[in-house]
Length: 149
Image (cartoon, rainbow, N blue to C red; front, side, top):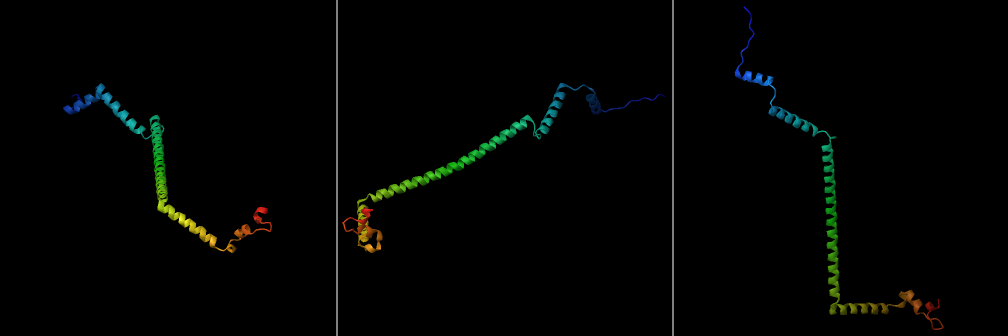
């Protein structure tokens, strides 16, 4: 008897075999292309020498420079504000002192104080101040020696 070569397949196995043997449909080909493209893009992301990655690196460097410049400018602005505040406080202090000195009682007190200093200096002996002695010393002609020089 001749040998027969045949096999029995279940319906799911038959569907699998037919799917493998049949030409791919447009949707399946498109899906396969998309998966290949996405896996390729994933691999390319790690490469540093692509145009997109170079552009992204330049953008990151530019952003970092801008952030550093902004931070430096903030520091300078804070210092300028601090100096401006100190200058304002100094102006206010000087204005307050000027108003205080313009008061009549303070002016009288200051005048009295200066007058007492002058009187005290005059009362000191001339021997303590040799420069004053030269000026006061008169020559025989009646002119101070300082004028003769």
